[in-house]
Length: 160
Image (cartoon, one colour):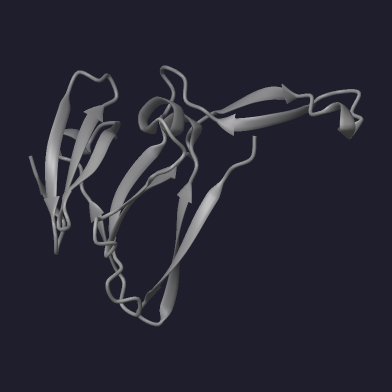
């Protein structure tokens, strides 16, 4: 399976940073229910997006036989990052980009609640509450603690 990335260039102080919305099977299947991790505010001026760091996640290897047209006699071995119980999950980051001024796009990271900051956590749901507010449901890895926070523009500080 190919990794799918969507890239966005944001000019920041004469340099450019590339934000990648990297497709991640764990989040696509288990959390998001889709392969999209971008959410636009209703007026289109703000973009909430998730980034995934799966460098510590082990790879699942599987045989890929392809199609008969490819003429392969033996499968190739493909891999994808997929966490199993007791192994690291991807580290997820939620950020908001203010797209109102294309020459000065501001990006702010949404911080998880303090109770989850020093343990494995992820988000289970996100939604725009208004054009200036986002609600996030955070979970710890054992899923025995969930916290809903509302994050507000312009600094995107979050309150439980």
